Image (cartoon, rainbow over all chains, first blue to last red; front, side, top):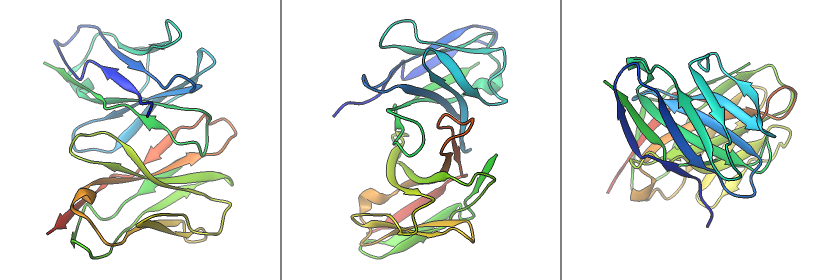
Length: 114
Length: 117
């Protein structure tokens, strides 16, 4: 069964550093998403991406964040100048279509900022 | 804008019994979708069941069913014949069907379900 993959599974970085979280969505999916879950809190939407551009973003997704689909398979989330409060689990998801279509989630990347 | 509220931080059930997890939501959209996701200790998010708001019939997936009360904006999940493998965090989520949204999901706070043997 096809699945969304994410690398790395755990990333430790120092405050102020840049990190890139990588995701490989399911190959025939057209919509891509990043969500964040701070430990013990709810899952929060960050950004959606369709047709090689951002289609929607939350207030969390400020200039510190960027997304890219550098090739036909990878979907990346870059966090510049990381802060302690960026420590969280970051989930990538993809779907064939928006709306009712199931969003398939990856296993997540745990980001720890020290 | 949508909000999703899960008022039960924790629930427990005996194996083979039935448990209901509550969820309420608020939305200004006329067309939307509702989901229940399961997050086991591995933290992977797994879709349990989905409901289209325009459908009156409650969705069912094997041992999982929902009670969708549109007027009350309530979307509860019933798990029948609970199994040890059902133990997980359960998230209720809402998604807009169109307009300016491209599939953004709004999640509730989650309910931790414990299944006792």
